[in-house]
Every structure is written in structure tokens, then in C-alpha cells.
Length: 112
Image 1 (cartoon, one colour):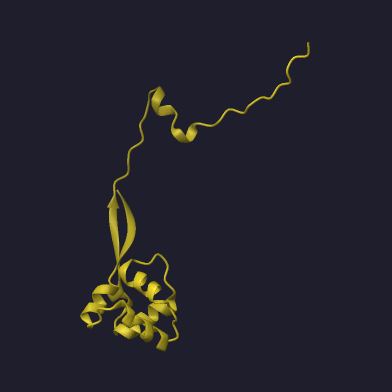
Image 2 (cartoon, rainbow, N blue to C red; image 1 turned 45 degrees about the vertical axis):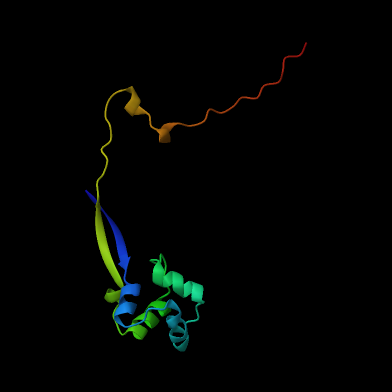
């Protein structure tokens, strides 16, 4: 069995434990720390797990919420079952990845 690494983003929960329920409350606090994000960017940061996060933003969030990085991000390993490859038989010898287009041959029409 293989593991697929992922994470859980807890920014919204940490904000709630600190009494911050409006995403727009973060905008001026981030600006005080030199991070300038629009209200829409902050809303997405709070409501959706980010795929990429600037370290300055991450450090500012930790400072604002008086927490550590582990409070905001929880790394999780999800087990993933590996599908077994079929063996033997005509059907198993070729797969979709083995199919290739046949090169076309362009010929001149016969001269009469």
C-alpha cells in the first residue's frame, strides 16, 4: 500500500478560537506586518486550503494568531491502494498507453 501525503488547513478554526470570525479582520493585521492582500485573497486563504503559501504570509499569520506552524497545518498520510497489473492474455498485453497513431502515407495520384 502506498501513502499519499496531504494536509489539513486549520486557519479558520484557529481564528475562531481567537475570537476572529470575519475574514476581513485579517486584512489590516496582515498589512501591519508588511503583507498586503486583498479581501478576496484573504477570504480564499481562510476558506480554502492553499496549494502554495508565501512564507512571509505564513509567518504573519502565526504572529497575528500567536500560534505555531503546526497549529495551522496538519500533515496527513492517506493510504492509497495500488491496483495490480493484469498478467497473461491478449487483452492485457496492450494498454491505452501502448496505442500509437499510424503514420499516414501521402501518395501522388496515378498519372493517366
